[in-house]
Length: 75
Image (cartoon, rainbow, N blue to C red):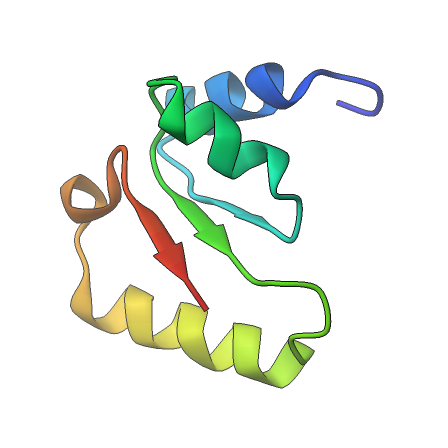
C-alpha cells in the first residue's frame, strides 16, 4: 500500500475489519468528513511506543470490533 491514499488505507482496513493506528492527523479529518472505517487509534507525535502498545492491548481486552467501528480512540 506504499503510496496509497489515506482513504485507500481506511478502505482496506475496513474490509479486513482492522483498526488503523496512526500519528497522522489527516485520518482525523477523514473521520470528521464521515468516511467509514473499522476504527482509528490516534497517538500524537511523541507518544512512546510502550504507551501505544499498552493502549492497544487494553483495547484488545475490552472492546469488540463493533465497538470501534467509525470511532476514534485517542492515546
